Image (spheres, rainbow, N blue to C red):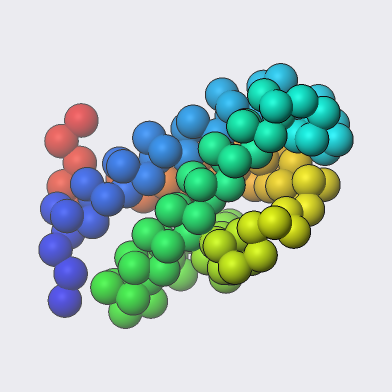
Length: 127
């Protein structure tokens, strides 16, 4: 059994972290921009750290809710969210800039909106 209040707190922390990705991605126009400068590499590093942490936390949430919470939000490819953590954590020096660009551009906005919905639909959201 999981603590619903703790779950909402974890989701809020996740949301705050995920919302950093679009800010860090604003100057990246094409995948090669990640490697074009030290600033681009720093942005890639920061984005990857958020993705690793988020993937790990979503794994924990899925385990603690016995697979019941995430499946209520089928618009997200949860296996992919959790799997990207493994790819980045275990093969960090082989980060594919094109895939990272695609994740930032296409997947992160939807994930952010879904986490907002998850928080809003909780009985423990006091905002």
